[in-house]
Length: 117
Length: 105
Image (cartoon, rainbow over the protein chains, first blue to last red):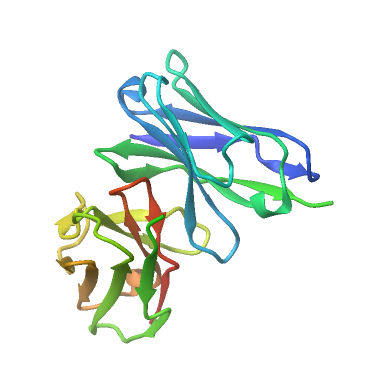
C-alpha cells in the first residue's frame, strides 16, 4: 500500500523554525518527484515546494523562497521541509505529496503547524 | 502567476442529481488540469487529470471537459459520499489550486 506519513508539526512563535518529515512506503520513492502542499484552516490547498527524484532540482513558491528548504533522503525514503523564519501566515496543515506525471495521486494525512505569538 | 477561479463557491443538491462545477484559468494551461475531492479532516483525493481522464478507482459518474481556459467537472447521479469540497488545480506552470466549491447534499 502506498503511504505517506508526515511528522514534525506543532506550535512555534514567529521567527522560529520547524522541520517536517515525511516517511514514504509502498512505492519506489527514489523514482518520483515529491512536493509539500499546505492548507490553512478553511482555505484551499497551496503548493509550497517541489524536489526532483535525485534532489538535484528544487522549486519553491514565492512566499517561502529563502525561508523554507525542501530535501530528501532516498536511502531512507524520507522527505523533509525545513521551515525557518516562520510567520503567522505559515499556519496550516502541511501535506507530503507524491508526484506521478505532474499530478498528485497520493497525499499524506498532513501535519499541523501553528505559528502564534 | 496563473489564477484559477471556481464557480459556484457553494452548491446544494440532492441524491441522484446531476451537478457541474466550473473552473476558469487566467491563461492557457494546455489541458493540464486536475480535479480533487476533499472531505473534512481528510487530504484531497485526485479524481480527474488532463481535464477529462478519470483517475484509477474513481467512479464513472465523474467526468470532466474543457473548452479553452474553462473546465467543467460533472457528477451524474450524486451519491452521499460525494459531499465535501472540490478543487481544480492547474499543473501547466507550477501548480495553482482553485478556491474550492463546497457541495452540500
